[in-house]
Every structure is written in C-alpha cells, then in structure tokens.
Length: 319
Image (tube, rainbow, N blue to C red; front, side, top):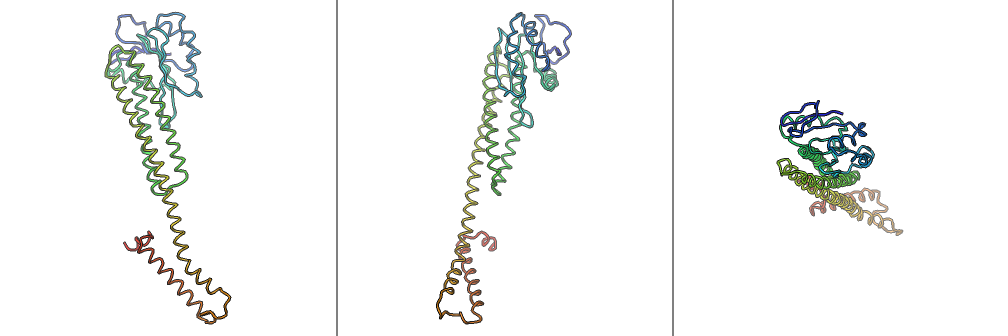
C-alpha cells in the first residue's frame, strides 16, 4: 500500500495525516493482494467505524479474473462511494478499475501498476483538484482507450470490405459475425459506463470542465459505435450481394457452355441415328468436316454472346 498527497500541480508521497482545512486530497494505492485492508481503510478515512466490514465480501468479485467486469457505482455510506469501470487494452481484453471516493481521499485498486504514472501526469498538469476529478479523469482515460479500439476496428472493417469486393470467401462471413459481436459488446459496455458517469455527475457539487468533457466524449463514442454498427450491417449486405453475383457468374458460365455445346450435341445425335444413308458417313473426310463445322459454330455463338455483352472477356479484348 502506498499513500500520495495530491495538490494542484503537485503529487508527493504522504508521510502524515491531513488536517481538515488543508487543501488537496490523499490517494491510497492498494495492490490486489491487499484487499483485506480495505474495510479498515474505509472506516479510518471516512471516520465511520465498524461500518464497512460487510463490504469486503460484497465487492470481492471485482478481483475475480474469471468474472465479467460490470461498470457500476454504489453508495456505501454518506459521502462514501465505490466505482468500478471497465478498461480495454490493445488486444481488446477487459481490465477492471475499482476505486472508492471519500471527501478527502481516493482508494484505488491498482491491478497492473500502470495508473500511478498517469495520475502523476494529471497532477502535474494541474487538473486534479479533488477526488471527484480523479473519477472524471479515469472515465475519460477509459473512453479514450475505447476510442482507440474503435479506430482499429474501423481499419479492420475497411480491409474486410476490400477483400469482400475483391473475392468473397466463407471466412469473411465469420469475420463479419465476430465484428458484429464485438461492436455489440462495446456498445453494451459504453451504455453501462454512461449510467455510471451520470451518477458520478451527481456527486459533483458544481459542473466543471472535466464533467462536460466526459459527457460530450461519451455521446460522441456512442454515435461512433452506431456508425460502426451500420457499417457492419452494410458489410453483411455487401457480402450477400457479392456471393449472389458470384453465383450468377457461375450460372452464366454454365449456361454459355451448355448453349455453345448444344448444336454440337444435336449434330452428334444426328450422325448417331441408325440410318443407312447419312451424309458424310462413308466419306473419309467426314470427321474433319464435322470438326470444322463444330469449331465454326462455337466461334459464331461466342461472337454473338460477345456482341450482346454477355461475356466479360470479350469487352477486355475489345478494349
């Protein structure tokens, strides 16, 4: 466990208790294996003794790696609140950020030891003035990570669209389904965060710039998610259209082959009849005449199809 004292443009390790009139607030960083110290910390920091023993087991699920992280805000006691947010990393893995807001302190469960450098930058920039500012900044940090994930998601959609238009494959349909599930999962998470952010705004005595940024950023990301959802639906339609076009091309090819061979089949059937007097049957050059006529028929039929613009390669030859 580490304690820090945060004032405007300053953050230092705390070595003494803060007075009631002293500006700034305390930041207490707890490791995941120090969870058992939480009830005592809440009691000492809030001044309400023996009030938080029951909360230890109730909120221990936040440390369970196999449990789905659900963003939420709960009021534990007057001016004592717990908040859990769901962060997302580059690989799309969810990571929980749990912290407790008190009048003069913030207790933060730091799972990956990555938050303190970020908090130090916020403090030195002079944007950390009270515990609720910490909550707003953590919310903006999480939304920024979601936005970066959505931008990578957009690039994947563009590449998938190019591949589908070039040559639709079976795995493209699986990719579309995976992207649809991903965007729905992100939308669900952002909607739950929006509810948490609205409750966080109620904890602030007056509206500040960070609260406005959090609201506008949430609204913008929700709009982006809807746009990406529409893109996924358009990709699904594009895939179905591409598959249908590919099927039509195959049927067109088969029709051309069958139509081209039909006159030859008729000629073969004619000469295969069991009549004694058939033209060219006894002629030694009969088979050569048959081949020549067959080739001419194929050329005439393909030329006709080309002039009717039914053959793609014919247009390429013309160009």
